[in-house]
Length: 429
Image (cartoon, rainbow, N blue to C red; front, side, top):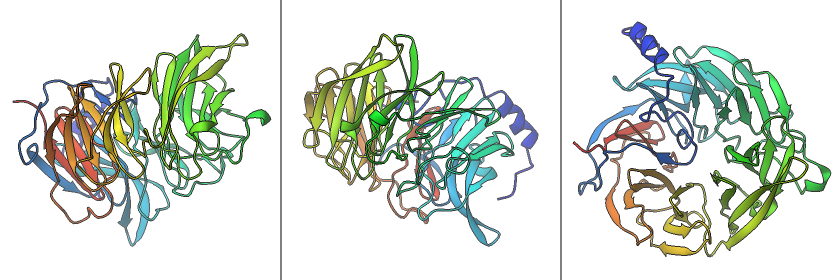
């Protein structure tokens, strides 16, 4: 897709001014804090019978499950695109004003149903991970490559998991955090501007159990007793923690690991962490405490078996003292849990098919099902209160599962399904 020259100078100027984060931006996986919470207000409290107004649809995203990141007037995603007779994996930048692509940047080889990573936008740069482990940094304004590394070839990562590398890179200060996997490079930190390798996490022999290759989760930050650390899910090791300053292995919680796919991003609240996986596994709340040697200890507060609660890959959100999410393997029964106890406050038959991706905004949950249905549900422990429901219209290029997580930015709801992007007006007028 050719670069749109018309108005490009204005675009570059607007991009250059857009790196001061605003509430209207959605710069990375699950939002600015990776918690699935949109801080915007003034949104519709209920939807019309047929759903919120559809403003526009756009094509050109290619094959893939990647969700979208938005900074200023530019949207970033990933997809497998056929260009010049061959198919490759790309980062794609869209101008929201024209709904047209601005640039594409090559990432690596294509993969069956496309990439899963949601680009991370920070300080005028965009970071993305391809399914073959190609970690790429490009300029946000132009798509020009700044640096690239491969998780296996350059970082000594473990085997590529069955559904391929899928995480969305984390930027924390000057560090980029990624998960090469394996006992020799469970996690790694790179200088975000140069790609220089700063550290790699080595698993101690005492914590090794089966294989520890990367899975399909994305890292988050926790800080306990002055120890900043990064948490993510690995294959047999379960939830794993590495020290931010040097990558030292701190702890892991293997009970949450399953032998197929470990996916949801952990929720962190102070010194507590909630984690869940599907495939008949369950969920747990962990209490983190500092240790005398400057490390951290993780203690199980409770464990919920899979019959009580399991989150497949739609994620969970914590609002006040409660967790809201879809529960079930290949399912998404709307569920409210009490954070401190794990008690099921309510659970309802799901209004859509398959797993459910959950986003919180202005008092409500946007619940998107893999079979395309979208529901608006009030986030309250008082009971299940559905405030809206619709199904996006079918379009060429929307085959397969609607797994890309929903995003709200500047009063607009963005839903990606394969090659197509839907934009809905969810702001009160």
